Structure formats: C-alpha cells, structure tokens
Image (cartoon, rainbow, N blue to C red; front, side, top):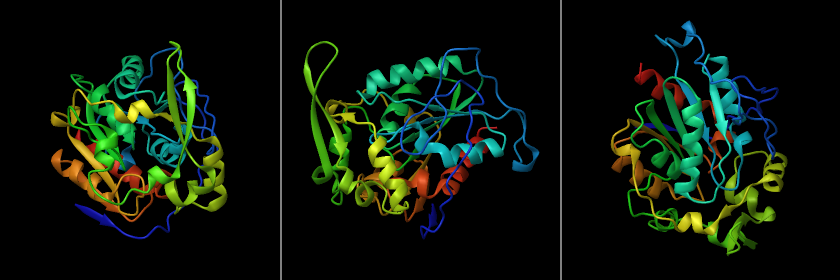
Length: 290
C-alpha cells in the first residue's frame, strides 16, 4: 500500500481539447472529454518516456455524483501528455444498471484494450460495465464504491462512521420520463466546499457547486448485481479526508477486492486537488496490463 500525505498539489488544467471523440462538457471545471458518435477511437502511439511497451490502452473515465466529466480535466491533461488516449464519459447518474448499460455502449465504440476509472458512485458503474469484457484490462477506483452483489452505495456509505453527506444534501422532487416521481440529490452550494472539495481553492469549488449534476436517490439505493473487480485486476485511491465516503469504508472495499491501494490525505474531490496522484495510479494500472 502506498501512503501519500499532504494536499499541496493543485494545478488547474487548461486548454483540454477533444482528441479521441467530439467533446462537449458543461460544468464547473470547463472542458473535458465526452463521447459522441463518429469513427471508432484508435489507441494512441507508444510513448517511450513512460516506459510503456506496446499500444497504450484507452483510459475511460467515469465521474460520480455531484460532478461531471470536466472534473477529470487535470487527469486528462496529464494522461494525454504521456500519450494515453482518453475518453471522459457522461454519467447519467440514474442507477448502476442503466448507467452501466450506457457506459458499455461507449466501450463498444472504443477500439482496443481499455482501463476503466470510476470516481465515487462511478465505481459502482464500472464494476458492472466491465463484467465479462475481455477488452477491459484493469479497474481504477478513485474515492469510489466497489460494491459486491446485493450491496448499495447507501449501505456502504453508512457501514463506517464519518460521512457528513446526509446533512449537506438538498433533495429536489422530480418527475421521471415514465411519469413516476422521484428525488434528485444535490449538495447544498453553501456546504459544497467543505463537504466535497475542502482541498480545492474556494473559488473553484464554488464553480463546481453551481455546475454539479444531481444523482437520483434511487441510484444510491439500487443493489449491485455483479462485481467485475472479482476477476479484473483493480487499483484504488483511498482518500483519508473524505467526508462523503469514509476512508474506512473505502479501505474495506478496496482490501476485499485485493486492489493495489494508494492512500492520500485528500478530500472526495481528489481528481481535482491531486490529479498527479490519480494519474500515477492509472498509469501504474495501465503498465501492469502490458
């Protein structure tokens, strides 16, 4: 297990343009990759300076609740600089099964080997989307859920003390496309910085709060039906200052999955506050699959 302490690393990524698919992203951290229709994505060329032999896998990033694909900007810019093809998917945040179906459609479109990376609730999605796929070579969980069949995100959050998320939520009644009613969950903007991104500059966190995407309450209550981490090599970034998913819960899930664990003193928004750490873990996973 690797332990990383301190939260001094912060560098805002700029100028991230679409490289593998046409990209449109909205939200607090500006542009990031999102898939669109077009020619299948080809793996990028080998980058000698990273010591990778053979074609690099495409890194597919799945964001979690209260964020969007642009939250990966700092990670995307670093991966691209090291020669990795990257796609940041748009997560519907409606439920693990439906969201995994959406992600699998994107995976079918991307040629070659792939590394799936999930942040927070995105971990539940990649755990299902990667099942029975030989093209997915590794899973990387970033402050994320690694549910076993029958478990829910809500259950795992409460398995250990430390989450203050319930008191920070703003529930909004919604009408679903089929006419039924449901509830979307936001984080109250005034509590977003402390709750979600305490080690992110306050002005950046305020932008993220305004642009956050809500998750359906039902998504956090939906039981997992499959766990790809049982068969796919896994890596995990455990955030020890996390107020959404307690570090003890993250550690429990990562150890159960026999994941390669890196612990870092960071908030839930570690991909924004510590993009270098997250990038290194992803690249370690990629190199291990060559």
